[in-house]
Image (cartoon, rainbow, N blue to C red):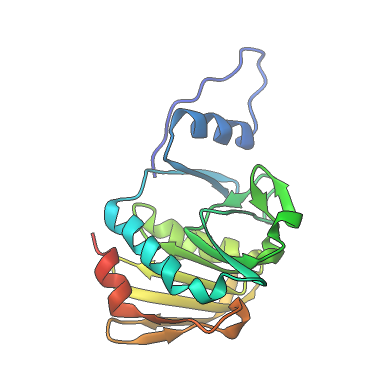
Length: 199
């Protein structure tokens, strides 16, 4: 996580977190700015293997990109656990009518998200801890984490309060079939995904 200086107006009034996030987004193109649990996070641009793996994953989810659901990269989700909270998952499967559920600042109501996916990078703890709670509170049914540090794929399902009741960890050599609730039958080859994602 990185921090950057932000210019404050001289009228004595402190800007809101959303205003600070907007300023940082303008000053730091390519960085991912999120507000999760009332905390502002700034993540540097992803490395090549991270981006490459997202392309492969998008193709792997092609069956979910149709009339009822869509597959999208970096689509903002408005989080219910704070007045200005939002996250930008690397990949998501959303209801096709997501446009009708815009909340604010290019973020959509979590009700349209059937699945979110993160590929770990410099924000490792955020993906494995902070976002688990945030996505569970938002009741996003499926959360997939491509853990490049430990060479694993995590699937979390059945959100309850600030956690997921089911957490499965998959190693290279295994295949992961995701719940049909995401809108299509999707099976991921763990080794194939991790081979591309490794830095």
